Image 1: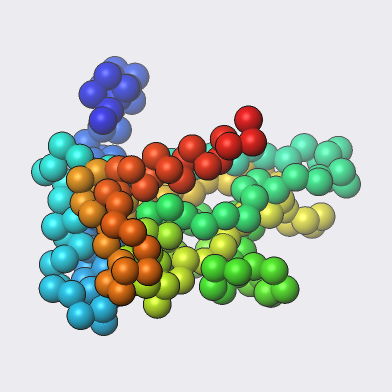
Image 2 (image 1 turned 135 degrees about the vertical axis):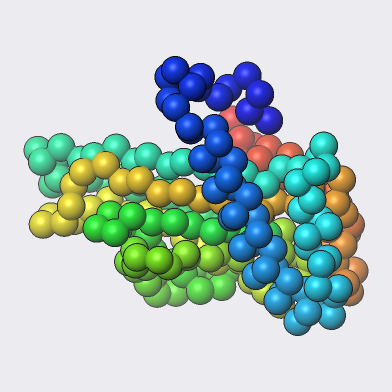
Amino acid sequence: HMATLWPSEAELAGFKATMLAFEGRCWAVGMRILSCFALKLGLAPDFFNTAHNPASPGYQSTLRLLHYFGIAPEAQAGLGLWRAGAHTDFDCLTLLFQRQGQGGLQVCPGKEMDGQAWTSIEPEEGAITCNIGDMLMRWSDDQLPSNFHRVRNPQPGEYMGPRYSLAFFCQANREAVIESPSGKYPPITAGDYLKQRVAANFKAY
């Protein structure tokens, strides 16, 4: 869905080819992980590959390049906001690539965060942080709970510069039907599910 949005070769040489190749590798890794979950859930090993088929016009998995602004030294003492507030992802699986020395990510086990402890996930060279999302939780009848996560501001004495990370969201194709095995949740297409979840963010407005 980037047809009119790519920077030209003159503006950023090799960017399009590099990003598409990286996205393809992310998809392959995501599908390998999801195939393990499929087997555990009694589904065909390629069940999620089909549901996330990149050749489909309804493909909606997304690679995001994230930039959090640096913190000015004089603002250190008055940081009341989060770089990213507590949330769960809407997708099946998120692959997060962090840069060493640029921490802040914290996770909370399970779907309920009240009274739970938050754990910092420090970036490690060669490690990919994986988060289960709400789509997979629904598909598994809550056997695989999505987890809350957030990105805190740096604390005094920590690196205050900009934070960069890459996130690949394995989001099932628009036409894929998310069907709860036991009927706990009504069937819904992944396209409608994402629309529903995004709309809920703006309900108060």
